Amino acid sequence: MNVEQVLESLREIVGPAHVLTSPEDLYLYEYDASLDRGRPHAVVLPGSAEEVEAVVRLAHEHGVPVTPRGAGTNLSGGSVPARGGLVLVLNRLNRILEVDIPNRTALVEPGVFNLTLQKALAPYGYLFAPDPASQKVSTLGGNVGENSGGPHCLKYGVTLNHVLGMEVVLPDGERVWVGGAAPDAPGYDLTGLLVGSEGTLGIVTKIFVRIMPQPEGVRTLLALFDSLTDAGRTVSAIIAAGIIPATLEMMDHTVIEAVERATHAGLPLDVAALLIIEVDGLEDELDEQVREIQAICQREGAREVRVARSQAERDHLWASRRGAFGALGQLMPSYLVLDGTVPRTRLPEALERVAEVGRRYGLPIGDVFHAGDGNLHPLILFDPTEPGILEKVRAAGAEILEICADLGGTITGEHGIGLEKISAMPLIFGPADLRAMWAVKRAFDPQDLMNPGKVLPPLEAVAEATP
Image 1: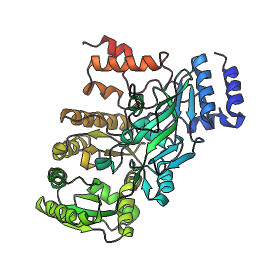
Image 2: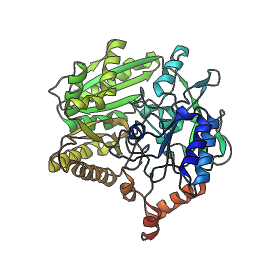
Image 3: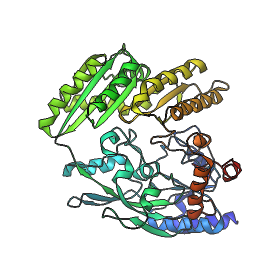
Image 4: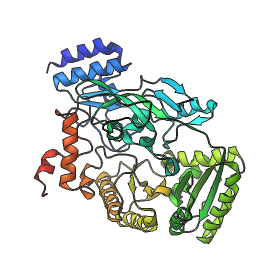
């Protein structure tokens, strides 16, 4: 490969200002929000689907790996260039192309921030249901790649449930449509296959999303507990009672302390855990649901249950939850955020076993997570300047994923596999399963150039494994 020739061709496609090669620029694109790093050979910022198509075709012709990237908020190393090559940044594709209220759809580009779409829909009285905590800074392309959830996924589902179709650039540079504006497109469900594939099968350049009316009414409750186990048991009790809250979030004492220091939200510092519970729907139904939830919380050991009295109080509560990850900087300079899922009924046991891992390794662990669907986010806090600390943190993280698998859960709920969790894939998939996934990868990307080194263990290791 003639590197200078490839760079010159890239400059012709996207313009010289949008091809970055200086050491300073490359450094900025060698990491995301995970602990992994990898240096690209060049960074390319296309401004249209046509430019993405041309860049990918050029890379395919020269055998150059391509790592798609949005805002770089990925928490599992998915946007880290594991094998060098090009980082293809989609932030310039940031237009909301259409909002179609009669058909309840919107057509967007992948660089649109999740919250930007929400704000654009609000004047119409509509919303896009997936709402990751990072929605201020995470892009819809990244949400599609990771099949992101968020607090409202308990009731409304994850990104996959709200994507109707996509324009996609395949690894050889061909641009195609899968699905479309109408639901239930015939043929193979390629939309379902591509959502959550973490950029390993293609690059999304347009997305048809399903939008929905804002609920008529909303009620938000804060339940305080002196026992983490009681809080975990309450989650199952609410769902067992036939109530499906819009959100059911949990924070433990460590996270509460950090959030209160950062936001001064008025959270009590002498509780072991809290639940943020939100119900929405028809106004006539909500007060009765609130009374039922209050009774369940009190029966399961809640010290106090508060109901937000205004939109300002609701916003204050949600600001504390959405800012929880950032607030942990009040306690430690760094953390590893994990993302495993367990059945709701196993939450108390999972929390106890995670705490035991922290004690054994001498590492503080905070918990903030989507309790309603059992999606745990243990945060292992550490000082990166401490010798040998990264190895200890990674070992503790691996044990926590094993706990999730052992309890009948899985190793990711919404953050993806990326680089970080490849070694954990055999916890939930056998050799035949992994070979089947590799067959799909090879069908789309026979040269293994599209976000290589992510999601799947090396093919050689899978091939050698005992069937």
